[in-house]
Image (tube, rainbow, N blue to C red; front, top):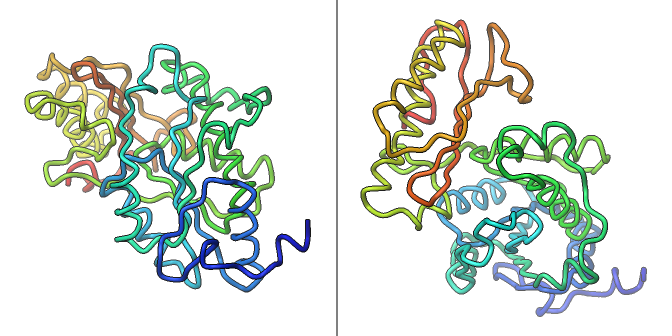
Length: 306
C-alpha cells in the first residue's frame, strides 16, 4: 500500500497545467497524497456538475491559495435526493463542465460513477444532527445526511487541505463545518460569498428550469433579503416584516420558509451578526437564498442587493 502511494506519478495521473480526469477513488487518492508528500497543498471544490459562474468563483478562489492544486469533484449524489425530487432530471453536462475546469485551470477532476463511491450501496451514512432536520432538512428529510456522507467520503479520498463551498447553500456550509470539527477532519472549510447575476438572482444549477417570466418572479427572493437587510437597525421584526412585504407583492412565489437565525443557525440574537434565509418555489423550481444582516446596526449593504 505504501509503495503504491509513493510511486512516481505518470502524465495520466497528473499533468501540471492540464485537467486530468479520474473516476477511480483509490487512484485519485494516490495522486493527491503523492502531491502532498511533495509539498503541494490540495484544495477541493465539490460540485454536482452543471457548472456556472458560482462554481468558477470557487475554483478561482481555490487557485488563489498559495502552492495549491485544485481538485474539482463532479458527482450527482443520489443520497441527498428525496423520492419526489429531481435526481433523474438534475442537469448533467460533463463535456461543458470539463471545459469549464480546463478554462479555470483546475488540474484534477474527480468524476466517479455512483458505483465507484457506493460500491455496495450505502449501508452506513452520517446523521446530520438536530440542525439537519430544520430549515431545508424539514422540507427535505434525510437530505443533509446524504450531503455529509458524500462530503466525508470526498474528504477521505482527496485528503484536501482546503474544501471550498458557496455561501448560497448556507445551512450546508454550517453543517459541513460542524462535521469537519466533530469528526476531526484535518482541513479548513472555506465559505465563498454567493455569486449573483447583475439583477441579484443567486446563481444556481436549477435556474435553467425557470421560464423567462418565472425568472423575473424569482428576483423576489433576493429583493426580499435586501429589503430585510436594509432595515436591520430596527431589529428582527423589522427585518422579517420588510422581507415579507416584498414577497407579498409576488404571489407567484410560493414560500417554503423565511427565517432569521444566528450565524451558526441557532436562534437569532437581539443584536449582532445574523443570517436571513429563504426558500421558495417558482413554478416547479425550488430555490434557496440567504444574506447576512447585522441586527441593531445602521443600514448596511448586502450581497443580496447587488
